[in-house]
Length: 126
Picture 1 (tube, one colour):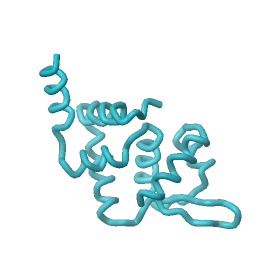
Picture 2: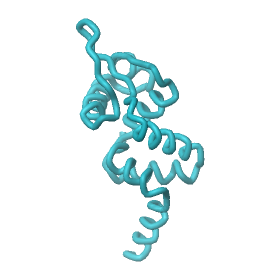
Picture 3: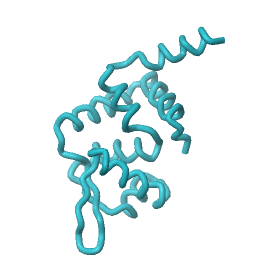
């Protein structure tokens, strides 16, 4: 049984090391993945938690938790506009390049299966 688990792990980790490291560090839930994809495809978007939750079809409370953490990790920028906080994708070139690689690779069904595997292993099963 252990060799089967090892084989599965080897298959699921067969990807660009930089992308794999980024996934393990930053893509720990499906709402987080949805936010990254949405903001990458809509660069320049700067919006509130409520609107981001609506765009990605997730609960406001969950999105609020994720964007707060993602801002602390440097994935998102936070700005105050009046009484509201608004969030946008980072403008850090290296981070944007990694997100771009990830979004592009996710066009492939096999890669998406690997991504789902890593999100589930991280405990992000919502």
